[in-house]
Image (cartoon, rainbow, N blue to C red; front, side, top):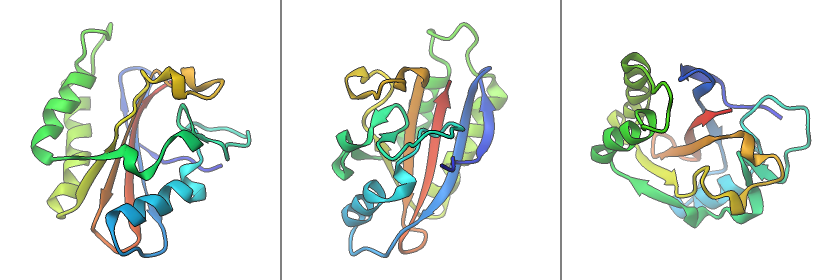
Length: 161
């Protein structure tokens, strides 16, 4: 199974990864999200693996996530959202200012291209949705950007394993 390429490291074992997922064109964002959730690209741990990952999505059992679980995130809320995650007092060593700036820059680029952002409303705290080894992703946040080209989802994942 392929994974998103890592764009920038965060913390000591964290990362921002991203790629474009090409899907058949859809008549609406919701239909495109449904195609994403049904696609082989959705079924990945986002970690290097030689295991069959057809039933998982990050730390989650794939069948427990629906297109409606992706909710809009406005650009005006992005910096505060990332600061709460990357500078959280739960980290022994929070992200550096350079790491924060790199992540913020990467996630602002699609907004600058007029794209719409959708955030997976579930995060690593939803252990009731985890597959049997999903706990290894102690951070999992997924951002999807729509609207650059028909049928293309720009996908970014912040993870920590």
